[in-house]
Length: 291
Image (cartoon, rainbow, N blue to C red; front, top):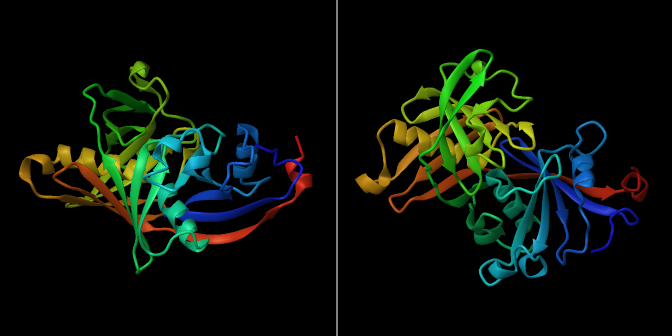
């Protein structure tokens, strides 16, 4: 790969329920994106600002995705705002698919996207919404206790290709500022860190959430987190589609909008929500060359 520090870098900006991303098109995987550069791109004062970077690469050109190239032409090489690599990002997949349509790589309809959490099936709906098949939730038996400002709650362990701890609270304000990661025990349950969701009920099969995302602090939305929340809420409410044979749908309010999550009897979890491209441009080499 070549360095981005001597040549202009093309970018786009997009968001899904205000979970926002810097998009870096790089079909042949020729751009070097070290963690420090990713963090600078996502800096909201000195950079472009974003909760993460969507590095757009052909699957065949990336060592992490070559095995998926026969199923999905494009790989979402996702990076958190601090530069760390992440397995999956649900809102990011929707925005990634919207970019592929924007760039003329795909048309409306079904699209396959390779991620480190596996191949995700995406449907670009004519009404502008995007539906993603997020895979099956895994519910490990061991959970944690999350604590904030003297309060503590048990948190359900849900894995959606990345780890989540889901805590049900009476008031979302109880989550505190969520700038720092809320402490949890035992820490050994999540050796690589965790996304922590705080959830309050809003009505029948309708909840609201706030989230501290691993590597990004509090974000306006988290797609995998909304899926984890819906599955955890369903089990709490005594609903399991695998047992009843009927799908279960929850509306999940996030700070940046609303997502609709459906869990099907075969375990597949679908997420529907908006995805928007808002800008595109070029970063100057002089900015890229700064330490």
